[in-house]
Structures are given as C-alpha cells and as structure tokens.
Image (cartoon, rainbow, N blue to C red; front, side, top):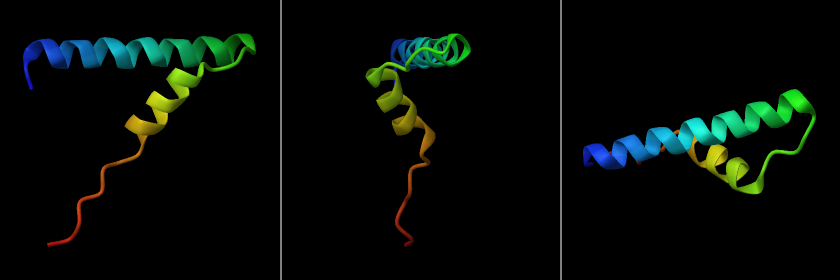
Length: 50
C-alpha cells in the first residue's frame, strides 16, 4: 500500500468514528455509510486454515 492510501484510510476511519460518536452522543442516527464502514472494518478477516 502506498503512504497516500494508508493516510486516506486513516482519515476515513477517523471521519466515520467521529460521525458515529457524534450521533450516539446527541441521540441522532448513524449514517448508513458509517454503519457499513464500521461493520466492514470491525469484523476480523478470516483466513482459511492451510
């Protein structure tokens, strides 16, 4: 991965984390995009046993 890709991934994760935290704090709804992103990054990747 390029350094730019890693940086953009970090920014994206921070953005969705702040969006989720803000929604939970203020009693709002979590955006669908943040919810999809959180599910995708929260589940560990499973590698088949060799």
